[in-house]
Every structure is written in structure tokens, then in C-alpha cells.
Image 1 (cartoon, rainbow, N blue to C red):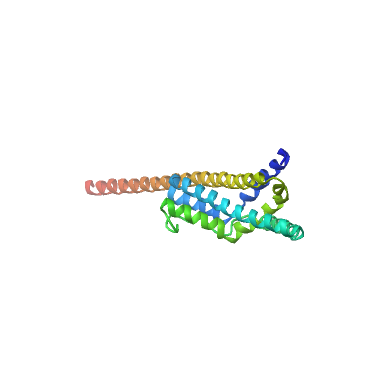
Image 2: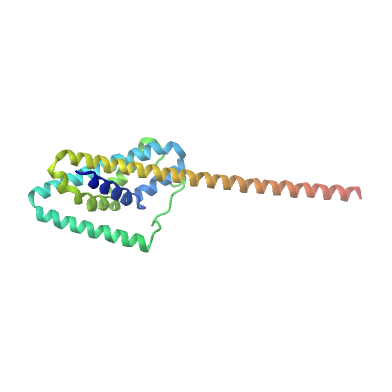
Length: 211
């Protein structure tokens, strides 16, 4: 494939993968709840999950394209329609539909459990599967001409998903630091107020005794 097609593929992949989905919200949730130690596990889970989902979609699409090119063209048209609907819904309601969980609501905490959870989210969750199934078949005819391009597209898609997950994790780390700083500052302000009230009470009591 030409570098122009690769540029379109990578740019479009980055935009679509950056959409707020349950798997990426989970990345942010683990980052807020567990801190930096969750980043390696969440990014690994996202990459593995997207590798599995992309490989499955590509295998089915290539098989279908070889058996019935017309059916593949119908699937490509339906995929473009789904992507358009997703874009319209995001434009009308840009906020995520589910909140970021705190550390009390995390489903798992151990690294292997986090990896397995993200793999499951990416390969089974409907929003992720629909995204992969709608987008990747658009490039199947190009990959069919050269099988090595199919593996390259799958790897690039999973790698881009990993980079997006890193961005989500870093953003969550920054939000976590801001929240922690705000909590420390609020606790400090409260303690200062308590000390000031206590000092005034002691002074008032001393004056009353002296009088």
C-alpha cells in the first residue's frame, strides 16, 4: 500500500479509537484507582484485545471477500453507515455514557486480572466490536492483494489502540494528581481552621480566667 493510504488508515484509526468507549473508560478508571502501576497492564490488555478482534474481523472479511465480493461490499457500506451514526451520536452527545469508576468500584486489581479484563472488554464489548467490524473491512480489498499488508494493518491498528490507551492513562494520572492536590489543600485548610478556632478558644478561656 502507498504511504497516502497508510496515512489515512493511521489517522482514521487514531480518531476512531480515541472515541470514549467502555474499554478506554476502564483504562482511565484503573489509572485513577490504582495509579501508574496499572498502566502496563491496561495498555497490554488493550493491545492484545484489539489484536484478537482485528485478526478475527480481518479473517472473516477476507474469507467473505474471496467467496462473495458483493456481500463484502454490502458489509463495507453498512460499516460506513455505522461509523456515520457513531459520529452523529458523538456530536449530539459528546460525553461518555458511563462514569469513571473509583478504586472502590474496580472489578479487579491484580495485573493479570486487569489484562484479562481489558482483553475481554475489547473483544466482547459491543461498542468495541462494532467499531472494529465497521472500520477494518474498508481496507480488506487492499490487503487481499498482498497478505503481508493484512498483518501490518492488524498490528498497526492494535499499536494505535495501545497509544490511545497510554494517552487515556496519562490524562487520568494528571486528573488524579489534581484531585489529590485539591484534597490535600482542602484538608490543610480545614486543619488550619481547626487550629485557629482552638487557639481562639484557648485565648478566650485564658482571658476569662484572668479576669
